[in-house]
Length: 425
Image (tube, rainbow, N blue to C red; front, top):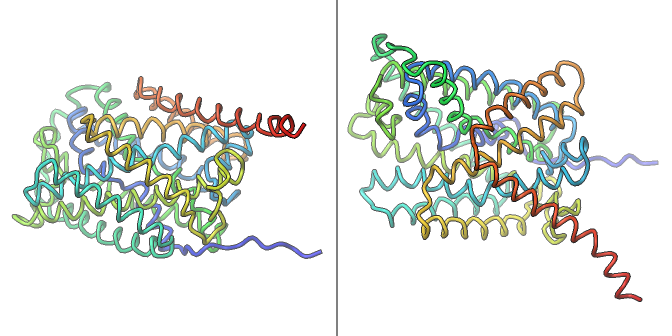
């Protein structure tokens, strides 16, 4: 009897870490320091620290699940193992729906900064957003090896830019800017934590790439730990610089990162900020598109989506059909956003509602699948994420609607064999 070896992907530790960073360090970092400061004042530092602490069990949970079950299905695979096919389909459809809504918001955020630096108006923002989306989808169509290499370069440049901004700004840190420390009390800190939830999503996206690693059992925990350490350093440095250097002005600035970059680059801060915004947008879209397209192929393989989308589900291959569906849906949502003038707040909250639902269900699955301390960590992550998700309010109706669509598809698919038998008679 011969043993069937599992095919290996092409991702190494460095490219894998870059893709994980791209999933977490999204374009929200351009505005979130200011939004958190507006909600809590200097006490936003507490919210940043709390969300980073929450990220540890969440990231560890997804790393443990991905190590145990490395597969393109990611969260859907974990959920199926714990709760069955229906729950897996719902979880998978939730994440698959993230790209058509989330990718346009990421592209529009990056495009707004680039257009501002170039002195362009609303039409220029749309054109640049389309270009960013085209680059991200094209990189994934070419293949994850090139996409992972591009991500490594993008993340390296981004880290240098952010580190330079913080290093130049922190010498101007003024302790006086930290008083009053909590002008809006504990409620302000909770509000800031809810806003910052958007900055800490992404571990679920990276889990869909677990099957692409050359040695998942050895690499996944290392990649997660490296990505988490880098994210923690960058976020804490940005939060400290925002509170201590910009002070109250941070709450009134739509782009506090540009103000910090001015300390390092002076008049060139605008163009540098535009480059940073483009890198953040491309980095986030690259990882999410890579993960979601592979999830779509895995869902089709498992019967939760149309069978033709399953082509390319094998590790090391590119799921071109799933990518094409994602690209078409993304283009449609971007067109609607422009026509209906949907603002970024709507798009980002809709995306976060889907991601929060995915995280809660996947972490709940981990409570059933994992053992020992990993199980307790998963339980903690589930409870905390669910509590924060309630702050999204009516936006949670969006994942509810997607869940209904997934269940309707499964029900119709289950009836197909009956119709075939009846037609045969």
